[in-house]
Amino acid sequence: MKEENERNSTIRIVEYSAIVVFFLIVLIILVPSVSKIVYNMAKDSATTSTKGTIDTVKSFYVDMNLLNEVGLPFKVVFDKDGYTFYENGKKVNYERQLNIKNQGKLPKAGSVTINVDGTVSVKDLTFGNFKCNQTNDQNLVCDNK
Image 1 (cartoon, rainbow, N blue to C red):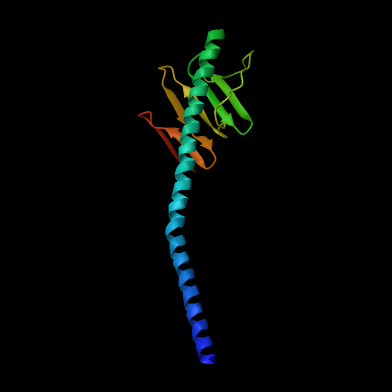
Image 2: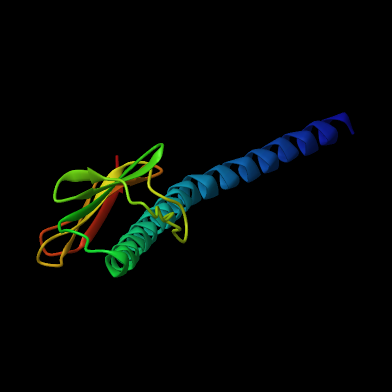
């Protein structure tokens, strides 16, 4: 009887060990996949926020241009305190200061420029751990800092 109990406890230990090993293997397989999914979601979020910021700067430019002539290049520089406007390379304080209301969050750093030819340049817009830039062919690229 005693020998049978020892045998059963040994079998239980082997079974429990097999279960633990099985779960460890599953975790080893799943963790990189889940990490990649989280990374891609954060990257897509930064890209979407960048597009939203570009659209917001364009709308702000159009709105300000309806009130008075706004010079190009028109640039909005973002930092941790908010944003600053520049026309023709000079800092501008508008009499009627509009708040930039962006769907999503504003970047913590970087700039968006509307160039003289009407194209838009994005430089180092920072959302969380991602910096977004616009390449020469006007594609957005967001990468980890």
